[in-house]
Image 1: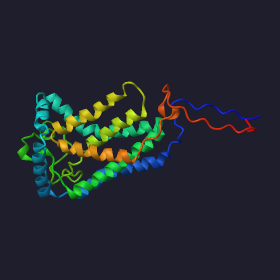
Image 2: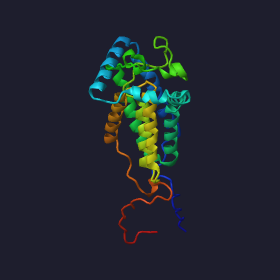
Image 3: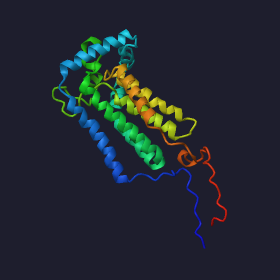
Image 4: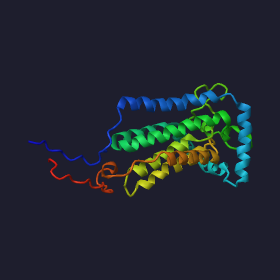
Length: 265
């Protein structure tokens, strides 16, 4: 008697999940490269401040909104600015990790795609501080901006001369924004809920936070968006099918396979 084939459970992916241990090592490696790779480009204080003045002047030439207009809104409330600093310090890594874990468990095909995109953008972003070190606007007196993390807390940075855990002269591109935008795009692509477009609030809030706390310029986010766009153009998401869409989300039916006359059941 032939064994019956049970139908696939809705919401599972036809693509097998990559080995867990390998993926943990890959993702951990990605974060370590991001964290420690940026430190290799430290020590360019003079050049980083010189580039910061050029970026600030270029934004005014392009008539981009002054970052101070965003910060002034946050400074109306000590609670609001404290929340912004807390968001900057605590949401970036956990949100990205949660995004990858959810995709791994529920959308393995999309997980592989998202992991490749994030790895590509992060690797490319690590190169830029070597050729264009950039001090954040909170370090440039000409901006008139307040270092909100230093004044109101919490802060993830120490004095640049003694902070050996991060490269504060790697403001461009903003991976805070680039990763947040990828999280939103990934969840929009991988799901079919009518509310999925609300995920765009994550990069929007992130943008307000990184600019309002004077950790990044508008151009940092623009460059991150451009780099992400290139990566997405080169690394395409999986084709959506009933098995990659999730429970209760009908998609395009797979092409019918020809039936072989006399084939066994």
